[in-house]
Amino acid sequence: MFDSVRKHQRLLQFVLLILIVPSFVLFGVSGYTDFFEQETDLIKVNGKAITSQEVDNSAKRQSERVGANSQIAQSLPFRQAVLDELLQQRLLAFAVNKLQLRISDQALTKNLATIPEIKALYKPDGSFDNTRYRQLLANAGMTIEQFEGGQRFDLMIQQFVTSAARTELPAPKLAGLISALYESERQVQSIQFTAAEFVSKANPTEAELQDFYKANGRLFETPERIDIEFLVLRADPKEDAKAFGEKADQFANLTYDQSDSLKPAADKLKLSIQSVKGVSRGGKAGLPADHPLNNQKMIQALFGDDALKNKRNTEAVQIAPGVFVSARVTQLLPAEVLPYSAVASEVKRQVTVRSAEKLASAAAAERFIAAEKNPSSAAGFAAPIWVSRNKPTNLGGPALDAVMAVDPSKLPAVISIANAGSGTTLYRIDQVRQPPSADAKVRQAQSQQIQVLAAQAEFVGFMSYWRNEANVKIINPLKQSGSSSSGG
Image (tube, rainbow, N blue to C red; front, top):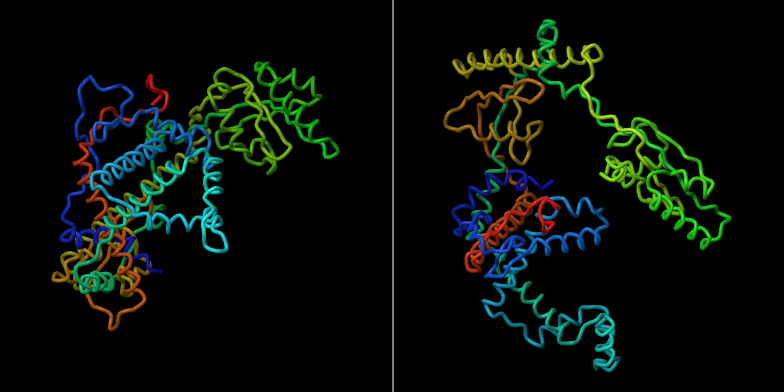
């Protein structure tokens, strides 16, 4: 209900521009250094490098923590996010040390008491059990000095971030001004020119259809598919868990050690080799919910290099409790463009729709020229409605932005908005007003959102300052995993 500020941040950012003095330049190329830098160095902060190995190790840990697969951990977007996080951590550490922030023993003790495991070490008489405290940390592989030093540092970071992001608007009137902009209403009338209205007038020739097919072959391409065979090992409810565990190990070892065939495992464990044809990267439609090919990990394994190019068995994948599967690709059917005869009707449909869109746009352009010459005339337009950024009704995105951007001193006015894939809409704006009363709850929510956005902007500017102070330098760009000798 109260997300209008978030949806229209561009307007807010313009208003806040006069408030936030720091220039927030997201770290660009602040200095590719010379060839004496290490190839594995990515970014240097105060002369100390963040390396590709650090990024890879951190990406692996974070992906394991959230249960993501190795492909995600190795992906460039994921690793870039990890690098950005490491950079911010280094900058925060640099700033804290530079500012010589300190945490008192009293503040540390108060914070430690909020940790349940430590709170439990206080005795009924209020005294603290230091012996158990030391043992608790020893069990975690830490000394008291290491643990409390880390806690102090975390508190300093929290203190620093909180102070950096604590931004107050200069005056409550500004929040009211911004809310007034979101409440401002405009009376709008529309007239649509949709492709559907012009389909009957679009009659592409055979030559046009053939030309479109030749120029857009990928639109009529069958996806890459594989034929596979697979084995399923299921636990027998009557079987001992230990016995099944041994059988599962044997299944995994046989399919791995003799990776050029499933037959050895099938013969040894008396399993039937099953097969499925025409499996794509999205699986295969029509299979039962518990079918192995409805398991994404199984599909990823089958389309991996080992299975796809080398025709090896996949690893034994556990797709459910007590259910293991190994599969292999028997045939790869590459993507191919279907012959024109097989897709002629679809080609005609697509060309017709595109032609209809052009006809709709042409009709809209003609009507727009006429409306510009006589904007006072509302002939042909729908009944008027009042819209605002808080209450956009059926307007959204570019249409609402364009309507609200019209100069109020030049009304009535007509604008044209292209709707991708469907046609064009003309909007006639002839009045602007403020609602008779403001919604106090909406204004309060917007004020809070404005504070948050202003704080975020201030924090970005603050970090930009510390980026300069720490002399951040980009040494090497982050590469796709495995594309360099460093694996970075």
